[in-house]
Length: 356
Image (cartoon, rainbow, N blue to C red):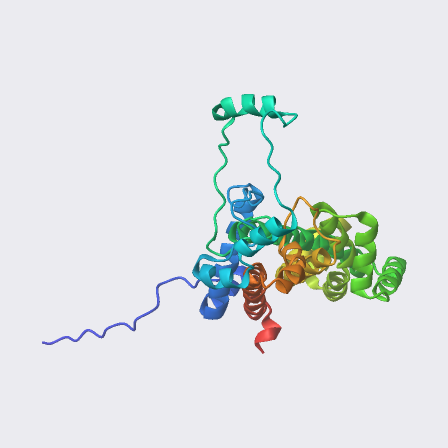
C-alpha cells in the first residue's frame, strides 16, 4: 500500500508591513540618486555652518596672515607679473623725496633713539611674517579667502535656515487661522495679504532693511516679515480643504478644541508640504541675504557673509584680483544647486500628486 502526501501550498507567513507616510517618502527619496547626492552635499554645508556658528572653524577669518591681495599659491608667479615692480616704486620715491640724514648731535631726538637702540632686544616684535601667497589667495587686508568663505557660508546658511523657520512659522499660523475659521478672520487676513503683496518683494525688503539697520538678527526678522505670503497662501488652501474632512469632524465630536484640531489634527497632514516650503524658503533667503549684503543692507561691518564678500568683488576685479569672487561663486553655486535638486527630490517623494 502506497500513500502519497500532497504538499500544502506555500503561504507567506511574514506579516504584512504597513509603512507610514514618512517611511514611504524616505523610501522613494532613497531611490532618487540625484536627491541623495544633493542631500549629502547639503548635509556637508550644514555641518560646516554649525561648526562655524560655534567658532570651531572659520573663527580666525579676521587675521591678516598674508600681504594684501596675495595670489593663490598655484598662480603666484603669474600674479606677480601683473603687479608693479617694487624697485620702480623705490626708485621713484628716492627721486621725488630724497632722504635727509642727520648726525646724532643734530637730531633733536638723537639721545632717545640711541637709548632705544640699546634696548631694541627687549621690544623685539613677535609677529609672524606675512605670507606671499595662500592656497586660494587673500583679500585687501591679507585675510585667507578660504577661511573667510567658510565663515561667510556659515553666516549665509544661518540666515537662510532661521529666516525660513520664522517665515514658515508666521505664514503657517496666519494661513491656519484664515483657512480654519473663515468668515471675517479670513476676509481680514486676505485683505492684509492682498495689500502686502501689492508692493514688489524687493522694494519691501529694501525698505524694511533700510529702517531696521544692519546685522544678522535684523536680516532674519526683515526676511521673515516680508516672505511669509507664499506659505500663508499654501497653508490657507490646505486648511480650507481639510477642515471638513471626517477625521476633523470626529475630533470635533469627541470635544477637541479649535486649537487642538488646528495644530494636532490638521497640521501634521500638511507637514510634508511645509518641509518642501522650508527648503524653498531657505534657498530664496540665502539669495536675498546676498543681495542685501551686496547693496550694503546686510550683515554688519564686523561680520562676513557670501553677500558681503561679493560686495568687495567690483573693486577687486578692477585691479585684476578675481580669486575671492571665484571662491564665493563656487560656494554659493554648490549650495543653491544642491538645495534646488534636493527640493525636487523631496517634492517627488512626499507629494503624491507630483508623481502622477
